[in-house]
Length: 403
Ligand SMILES: [Cu+2]
Image (tube, rainbow, N blue to C red; front, side, top):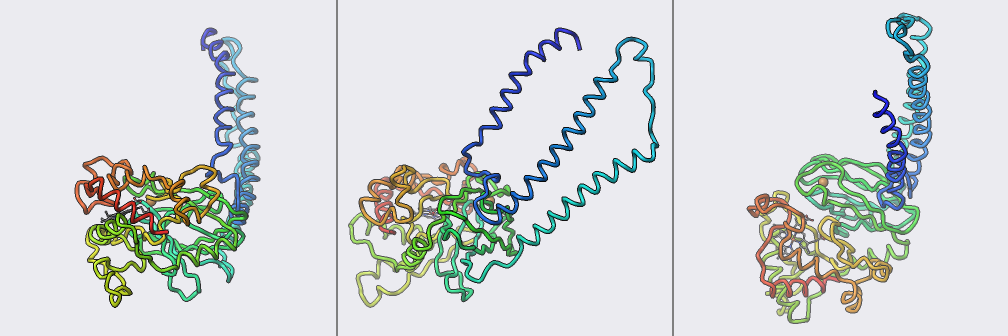
């Protein structure tokens, strides 16, 4: 290296150092930080990672430091040094045995602790754990609750927000309806793949009420980056109020725009969307028919025959794979929790009407798909229906009745 190049590099060094320090501090309030565990499983993983990271750091300093020190100490100082061969130690028995056995021992110890933790994390959840089936689908997550332990996971069917009681174990059964996804909320536990035809158990628990963000971590198609996860941990009281509310039957809309929206929903949307307990609007005036559950037409557009259940849609905080806020993200609205939409006033103040309307106007664009990717109704995700603005207004009026 010429003297000029060396001094230029030396001048750059502090700047490089500053950039590295700055980059290292970027994540101070990142919501998906594995190094800020918020539940027992994540805590155990953290307890293993930190010492291993420390050991790896010491090894790195020793090896790199030794290499740099030797390179500096034995550097060539004059022409004679260039011609001289250093002393060769190839075949030095003690040295070679030593540097084979030391790392092997170290890895064996780390391996023993790691395998032990893997078995520990795979233990059966406690009896009072909340039972939830998790379905990954391009590009959103569905959550199905079995509240009474009878093995029937249709007590509550919801999407995007996974509502759980803080301080209680939640036994997830992770499944997929199409391709391989991976469910990961980094502050609660490690990740678990969702593989078609398989059931992968994962137990999570949040120490405190709060929101724990995550995302699909297995590339699963065009909108993979827009398949987020949001775990909403609430108090035990709020959780029982939430479960009770989610099981309330469908209520017919009364407002005219909402009734119109109900009609177009039944006509255009139920080929994919479920809405637990919804009755057919054309029969709703006749009291004898009014209790009949709406019969869903053949769900032929979706390979996997499924779209988010829209029952009590207005209690969610997000929609479309937790990509968009359904409830505005202001402190005032967030503080209302799962009950934000329980009053007309709450909906008026907190509904993110702009994004919801934009979704009905052109859902593929909201998931950032190029027009060519969604040429037919057979493509994945929600299609664009070329709805008129009036239809959109009516549909939103109907959706806001799904409290
Ligand atoms: Cu995915």
